[in-house]
Length: 392
Image (cartoon, rainbow, N blue to C red; front, side, top):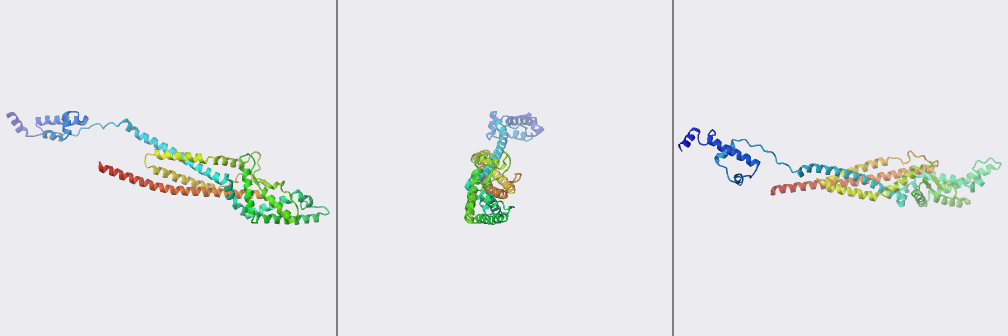
C-alpha cells in the first residue's frame, strides 16, 4: 500500500508517464485493434460492443492511441461482376435500338410501297392528278391523233399529207381536213367529263401489266383511250378506224435490251412491300427487349428511339421528295410517254415525302410523351427512395 501511494505521489493519479497507466493503455490499444480485425471475437469485446463501457483508465489510454488502420472488407465476386454485367446490358440495348430503327424504318417504307404503289386502287387514286395536267393532256391527244392518222384505214386513202401525185392537192386537202376532225375528237375526249374515269382505266391497265412480277419492259397501256378515241373519230368523220393494231396503244417506257431499270425497281418494290409485316414484328420485339433490359429509366430509352426514328424519317422524306425517278433512265421517243414518266415521278416522290414527314411528326409527338413519362418515372423513383431512407 505504501508502494502504491509512493507511485501515485511520484507520477500522479492517471499520469500518462505512470507505468501502471501505460500498461493499461497498452492492453486497451490491443483490445481495440483486435475488435477492428475480428469484431466480437472474444467475450470481452462482445461484452463491450453490447453497451458495456471500458474502464476509465482504458478509455483515457485509448484516447491517446491513433486509430488503427484496417483493410476494407472484401467485395463479393458477384458484386464485382455487376458493373461489367450492366455495361454488357447497355451495349446489348444499343444493338437492339439499332435493330429497332433499321427494321422499323424499312417496314415503314415497305408499308408505303404496299399501300401506295402495289395496291391498284391506291395507285390509281395517287395518279389521278395526272389526268388533269393540261400539258400531258395536249401531248397525249396529239400522240393519239398522229397514230390514228397513220393507221391503214386512213393512210390508204389520204396518204401522209405530202402527196406529189397529180391529184395530190385534193388528197392533201382531205388529209388536212381529216386531221383537224380527228384532232378535235381526241382533244374533246381528253377534256370531257368522262376522261377521268377513262384515265383511271388506263392507269389500272398499266398497273396490272407492270406490277405482274414478270421481267419485261415497262409500258404505258393506253388501250382504253385508243378504243374510245377510235369510236369518237368514227362518230365525227364516218371512218371506221381499227385501233387494235396501232403502235401507240402501248407506249414502251424503257428502251434497253434485256436491261429494264423501271421493271427491276418495280419488282424490288413488290418484294419489299411483302415484308412490311415481318419487319414490323421484328422491330416491335427488339424494342420490347431493349425496354425490358435497359438498366435505368426505360421510358428515356424509348424516347431516344422515337426521336432518332423521327429524325431519320424526316431526312428520308427530304431526300426522297427532291429525287428524280427518271434520272439515269433512257427516256422513250414518245412525248406523251416522257411527260407521263416525269409527272408520275413527281407524284410518287411527293407521296413518299408526305408519308415519311407525317410519320416523323407522329413519332416526334410520341417522343415528347415518352420524355414526360421518363421525367415522371424519375420523380416517383426519387420520392420512393427518400421515403425508404426516412423509414430506415
